[in-house]
Amino acid sequence: MLIPFSMKNCFQLLCNLKVPAAGFKDTVKSGLILQSVSNDVYQNLAVEDWIHDHMNLEAKPVLFFWRNSPSVVIGRHQNPWQECNLNLMREEGVKLARRRSGGGTVYHDMGNINLTFFTTKKKYDRMENLKLVVKALKAVQPQLDVRATKRFDLLLDGQFKISGTASKIGKAAAYHHCTLLCSTDGTFLSSLLKSPYQGIRSTATASTPALVKNLMEKDPTLTCEAVINAIATEYATSHQIDNHIHLINPTDETLFPGINSIAKELQTWEWIYGKTPKFSVNTSFSVLYEHSHLEVKVFIDIKNGRIEICNIEAPDHWLPLEIRDKLNSGFIGSKFCPIETTMLTSILHRTCPEDDELHSKWNMLCEKIKGIM
Image (cartoon, rainbow, N blue to C red; front, side, top):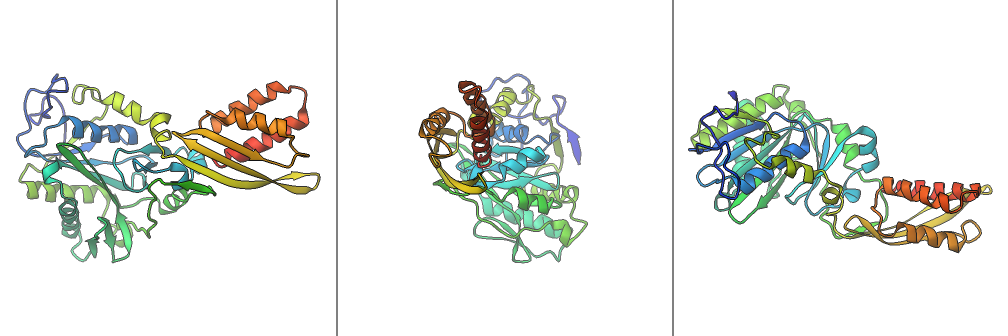
């Protein structure tokens, strides 16, 4: 049963003293089942942060359901250039987010359910949560062959991954979140989670590729709505709480004081790209010159998302050393992103305003370099 979560409800959240207590007059007497009314990945990730940091979860576990418009979400210690097709994401308007938990990269759309299980650190148990999900799915379709693995994934028919897991464990609280594929666009998922970038060397956590399948491909009755209701029912039974899904608005500062600043931080370039572990790109490409192809080599070191070392090597007769040095020094300190490379091209143009041939070569080089960003 869905009910709006408002100040008039008796199911008020319990806050720790480190958060303003405005609007929180009552306490949660048992667990809660929440569902976001937002499809914004940053707002929903902010709810996770807020509950983890500010709710007293002692004997009051929380299950949070959320779904997002098309987004790619990378783990805390991952490299987005290594994990996904950023150029395609920009073209298609797909958001990129970095979550606080570890683990691999996942694709979200409205055909995927995200579940977050909040408990105290002491009661954190991923396998128990996954067993609960399996039990709920089999309550809807008893013949379903779904099982949890030692990697804390859920497999359908022993081979298709329908759920991946990640978690965050704090000093007192912990959460385990997982995806659940019901009717996700599988073609889009495959295209977006395939990096086209070559020559990346990184110590970042790498995702493990897997065959995936939607639950609705197995049984059309396993819609997102049916699965959410089944899991909520099983969770309520297991934790002996009321079977009510409370709808929440992640932008409501009366319920979640300070949450919009959390969501804003999660959208910053410094968080999404700047938190990438140090990496390097060592690649090459060809350029056409007088009916023949010349090789240009590029070596770039990136730290905190910014270019630390840049070395572009090209034949002297095509691009003089002095000009290459200008390019190399111009890139130092800039963000490893297409927008700043475009700005750099404009600045370089102004240094030699009358040289059209040079402009053409700069444009060609910068377009090639933008292609690896």
